[in-house]
Image (tube, rainbow, N blue to C red; front, top):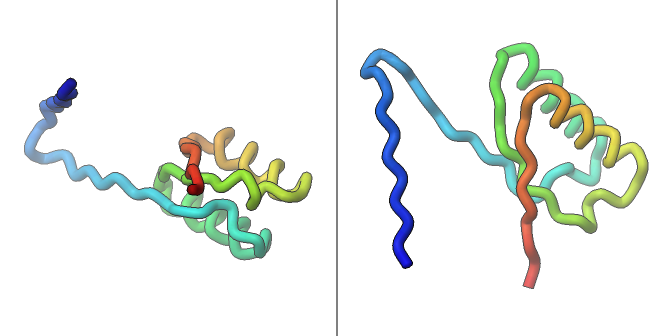
Length: 79
């Protein structure tokens, strides 16, 4: 089964889809800094999360912050 998506956008609109793989990083300070930068520049991204990277309550809270700030989460499966 084929799925097709079509989007019409005005020519003067600039659009970029930014995804970040293997989030959140094990270094919560780096992930926090990334969220701060994204917020500063009003950039929204999709984080693809590996469940093993959500090892602590702090990681979970950072992902909750990401969602609260308008970012999307995707499941990054592992084989």
